[in-house]
Length: 299
Image 1 (cartoon, helix red, strand yellow):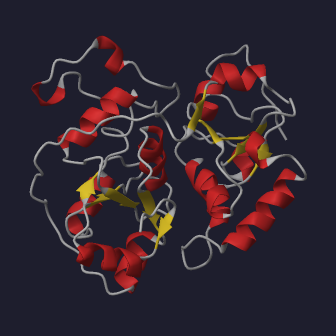
Image 2 (tube, rainbow, N blue to C red; image 1 turned 45 degrees about the vertical axis):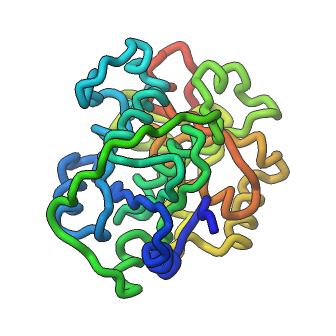
Image 3 (cartoon, rainbow, N blue to C red; image 1 turned 180 degrees about the vertical axis):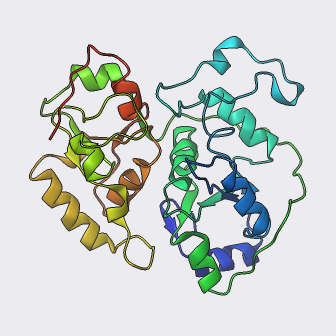
């Protein structure tokens, strides 16, 4: 069985015992303290898990050109999006996957201890790289430990380098130009995953301009989880998104947040709900508001 959206802690335990090619990634992170994720990983992680750092591995701005002694074409180092956490190019991302030993025949399982806020980024990026077999551990490390899963501390042994091959993208990356061109048109419904006060423009702790993209609907990403930290049942998610969309077609949705990270739980939740694949504006509000010519709405 291939897991493509969510995987439970029990299912992951069974998968680890099956001997199937598998790589688990710990994506724990804290925006206000970027080193904390690696520290938490060192204290406790699922045995064998590879640490994926949002800033260093899953964003372009901290990338090291020519890492692992490889001569890289200049275009491989061009970010694929703008914003505070610009996507690395697909080529750069494939190089990182190869460097940690991830191969095309592997099932990937991603998790964090932050309500799926950060591991969703790697889930989406693997889909974008053409890799279907990737799932989010429902409930994160907390669910793993509750289910009796063992944890390890310290570093893990390095894997042999692989040769991960890119395939056509399985998810849609949307640019700021596209969002602007289709603004408030029926073929595009922007869904903003930030908290309501930021969406309304009452506070803005991270970006220079407060507000939201005109016409955007608000769905804070945390609304996808129940009190137990797991995603709500598919039927509940479907009803909530259909209420939010109010008749707008699900396939018109383009998700965004502050920097393209916490929008992904909404992408995943819509797929769990059976509403299909949607677009991601990865540059999100941080890219949108960086150009004063783009319109801003408040309230």
